[in-house]
Amino acid sequence: MKNLKSNNINKNKGFTLIELLVVGVILAILVATAVASMSSNIDETKLDKVSNDMAFIASKMMKCGVAKGGNFTNCNITTLRSREYLDTSWGDGTGISPFGGNYTAAVVAGNTNRFTVASTAIPSDAKCLQLSDRWTNQSVVAPTCNSGTFTFTQGTR
Image 1: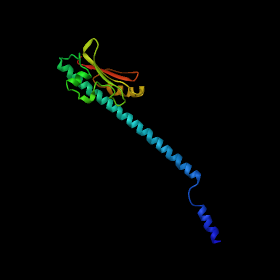
Image 2: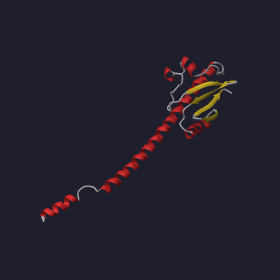
Image 3: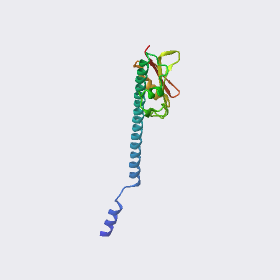
Image 4: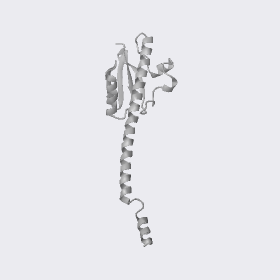
């Protein structure tokens, strides 16, 4: 009799397959939710970085234009670097945005009192529109999104 009871006790130890599957499914749902949340936060951080970088470039373009009496002709990333408004880590703006795209800055054709700043390789129209929303209330003209490129215009007039 004693032997039968000890066998019954041993059989009831541990978890059933269904219990293990339920725990596995719950863990998978929790991991998927956490990954989605982290991915969203990472993209938001990248958008913040693009926005800050573009504001920094714009401020240096303004400095270049003011030094030239309000004329932005020949003000661009390379010029900003050669005048030491930007350090050498900016290179020529190629491939340095958080999304792996390029930054450009140039005078507006036909209006030397204005310049554009752009960032390429924005991964989606939704993200590009988020950038546009951030710049809409700033002192910029026509923030636009086109095929993964976000551009705004700024200047003295």
